[in-house]
Length: 339
Length: 154
Picture 1 (cartoon, rainbow over the protein chains, first blue to last red):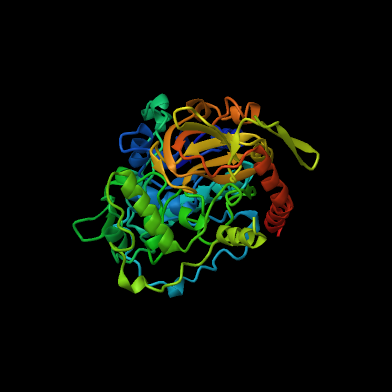
Picture 2: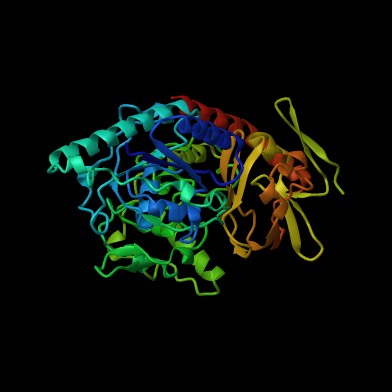
């Protein structure tokens, strides 16, 4: 029987509640039959040489990724690293938005360019560890996914000409044993990174990000498709290009506002109060924010600020800022209070 | 040196040392002789956040503009961006907090300092000015916190 690879990506930092959930979840998953469970540091921080990343790249079959990131962010982050597959649909929904999951106005979107190349024949399921604070819902969902993957494989092999007796060719590729990788290296601390992730199911290849970013983060591949070419040239903390993107296709997985961090809709990030307004956060329209964020990074780099003179498409003039997410609304409410 | 004051948040006392300057974003400033000043969270801010779990700076030391978002904090009760109180140059962040941020709770006016900033402190408040700022904002702050909690329960 083929086994399903489950990878848990740890939260950065030492948050006791997050660590506790990770540990109880791993403990519960290890007791489940048919799973190959591994733990890596925060997915977003894994550089190309990190053992955790090499392990992920070696997994050929279906994959479940549990992370503290929005599923959309995790999926496209893996895609950029060449860990590609078809998006597996999770039934796991945070308690708040059970029936209204699909209210994104997808018809309004222009056609996106989609992921690069031919996707391998496997599914990648991304689950968000912020949805529940106990292990049980995740374990149940992983069980359901394992059954779904098994059924899909069986249906496929039934459709193929039989070479059954030989027992060759029909087996799902066995997941790579994480034990083939040094356990300590798998969990070696990864330095914090900061870079954009493109959602190619939204990106139309308009190349506005390429024009806007003056730090050489973006490039195009041999097919002239936009690509986050130099991840580590990105300026830590700066999300300016994502504000400029007309399709909201650019994700900064760890940015505090849900819309930029890759939430599908305007989800509120957890059940905690947000004190940003009290601590001096400011709100301006998206384009003005993007321009001032970029200027700040230019000056910090010893270059000249360019304001709105460079890399802004004309057609954005007078364009209202993108739809506000819940956090934006929250901040507006705080404004109204006149703090 | 002005006398220390204590602002009452309901029944919870938030002590405000007299020798410090204060920023409206609830940071204190301990002026340094060389124009490089230490900053940290006031007892008022710490009380709202409670135990700090995670602190991260999202810029490297260098030039910052006033109100620039420079970091992120997650605590028992809250999450927040962290913003530069003044325009200037961040000289360094408190390295010990990156290992363990609990000094923010244990010794907020001492070992819990956040960063050193070379800046012009002319616009900051003295202890009486900050106390007045808290008094004016306290009702609205309570309404805001309550409003957020209601929004979460909806």
